[in-house]
Image (cartoon, rainbow, N blue to C red):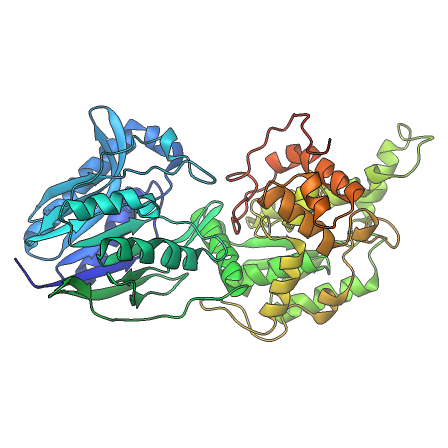
Length: 552
């Protein structure tokens, strides 16, 4: 029995499905932990989280099992033991679990008991819940291994306490949501520590995975709920924690205490990291963006530069006869401030070609939304042509307010590979733009100063598809629209409930109708990073065809 343990907390990225890459990274981290007793990695570090239906491939399960055995053999060298998360097949069933690797073998395996099946999670589709886990014994110390969701409910940690656990080490794959870092710490882990009287180490993965992004922000709390260690958010970090047996049990000595990003910096970092990893891991050389002189495209351009560097961002202004000179000037000013390549490709020749092509069939009809959408689709085709010819991925620029009500053109401004703003309401976009002009986030590759011209922030939003067009010609003011959408989307409120809060009934009914009618568009939209609790796609899964409305 020992009275001191040194545990290396490894907050690292993952490559979903690339087992060899993950093994390589874990081995490198273990080598840097020389002299420690134990290395703790995030949830499912061996295969990457979330694996989704990849784990239905028998070959992946077999490859993961062989890789885990190879990692276990590494520990015969007398170096640190490892706690490694993976998928496990047991009696024909699949489990999400963590294995203790030491002395050259797989010494113990514990399965996740609480399987999340809400919002972005659907683990019950893939895994079987494990039994209430017993502690594992390591160097004479009984260690509880609650896995991610296991710590969000009192049962697992309470059971581990009754079975003699002396400390809790929790591997996690917890996606970012606004204000979730404090929720994890104060509402979850501090409570579990105080309820059990046991110290708890929480280690989370970091990096982007499709629509999800993981912020890290790992920490250790002692049995009295006090914070012993706080690791960084949005970056990889490895910290050696020192644990000692005291008169009242085990505790972790105080260590690093990093500051976490506050809002809206945290949301900016989420979009930046998600965009970076999505572009890089899909092997794209860079991105191309339609830069209109409006707020959304300017913010996406700034995000892309922070994520990838200016040399990998290409901004294209595509003016029509309705584009005012102010837009041309602001787009050029923004591109210059960001240091990116900037092209101007007028779409008038293509618009003329479509007018001539459709002239006979459109005869005796009025100019309407059709002609506006043709312009948008010409721009989409132009950007996709540049992408096909030269390789950069098209980033779309529609915000959540527009995506909610369908204020976007399918196969037009919705065309592209990724949308950093998909879960950011218009009012949030303005707030982030103002913030970015005053600060440079950690890990950003873009310049400081006013990267989004004030003129872009101040001007009324417009699609510029007809003379003197303003967004508010078709939509309520964005502060009103976003407040209604927060109720309808994030909180699943109905018309009557929102009217009781002071909103105009006709306006709420109109917005609800727009929201449901636009579902078919959202199903065909580019993926985008999750910021809140109800992003479109992973969290909010409504039928395209349905007749329900909350108004009576």
